[in-house]
Image 1 (tube, rainbow, N blue to C red):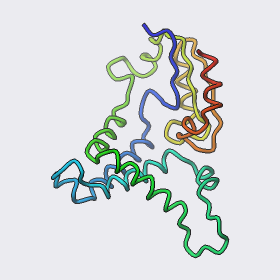
Image 2 (image 1 turned 135 degrees about the vertical axis):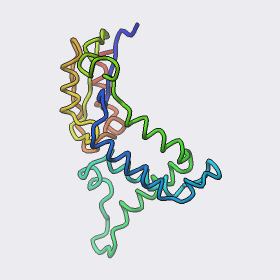
Image 3 (image 1 turned 180 degrees about the vertical axis):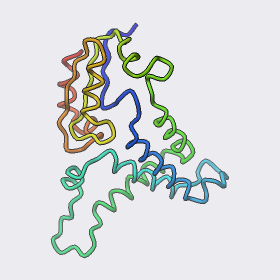
Image 4 (image 1 turned 120 degrees about the vertical axis):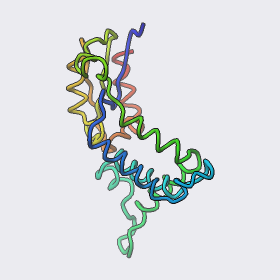
Length: 187
């Protein structure tokens, strides 16, 4: 049915590190009293903004933040550039998403296990018949390149390529030209 497949910055099973980030996000949402009151879908904006801030840290890297959010002034008393960026990203999500949806989507991430009911991850991956390309990102913390590479070895005939990026998991969004080149090898 599917002739070609590309698996980009993902693994067939959620890792404990990502689950820990998801739980921290849920804890931030639950800490907002409006969430449990459930009076409207517009509730818990503060908790959602905090959850987004936590998530963003997991998608990025120290090197990426240092490259884009470093204070421009040498005499800055309080560093605010990165803090302002975190608040901005939280507000951006709050303006287009609701806390309840985000909360339950994080559980969907935690349930990621391609091997469930299929005899385990390796057995499930060995059933893939499509020409497959697995792309890892060298700086991705939540879907580490080494795990992507190991999973590629379990897919018959799969090719593994690695995207170089200082921006962690978000590298697949930021490094669009190099990713396009990698994907061209499959399509």
